[in-house]
Image 1 (tube, one colour):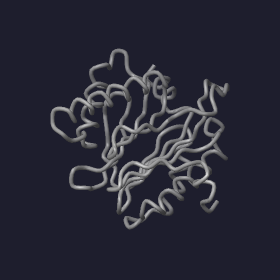
Image 2 (cartoon, rainbow, N blue to C red):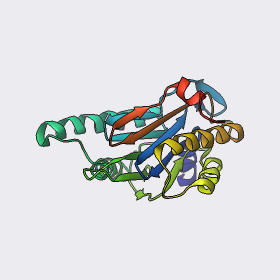
Image 3 (cartoon, rainbow, N blue to C red):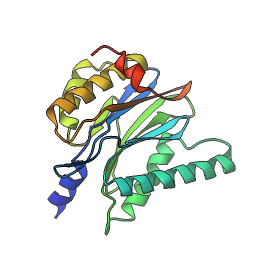
Length: 211
């Protein structure tokens, strides 16, 4: 049962996150699949929580979207009470508690949460379906194409990488995964989060980047 559970979570996507010298970059493909059936070619797998916080989703769409809604509401409430947005650490802790409290009927999700803390430092977290999480100092990935994408990212990564360069490399990592993993495909979305805020790159901007 455990093996089938984890297999169901990791299938059907590729999401990436990279810690940069001036922020963080996250990316995903746009294919939603149900076993061998392609259910959608326009799936949204990256969500803006605030100007300093974003999240990628993999696994069950309904479960993931529900968690995203909870996180957005909690962030809005925190802003009203405290006058500032949730930090990446606080948002991760909140999601971890929700997932841990539902182990009997777990959410079929794998999440990457990325953003900047109050000091402007980059933070990146990989969160598993049962509420365990890892703070990543370099990069991370989820989904069925993650191994292929990570092989590329590991080869190019340096601590000095900027978000400008990371956008290009995340895009290339996703394209490599799309060539090797049949459950990954149908376009890409890439987001950077810096002190200037949350920015999602348009299709036209991504197409202009080097292949």
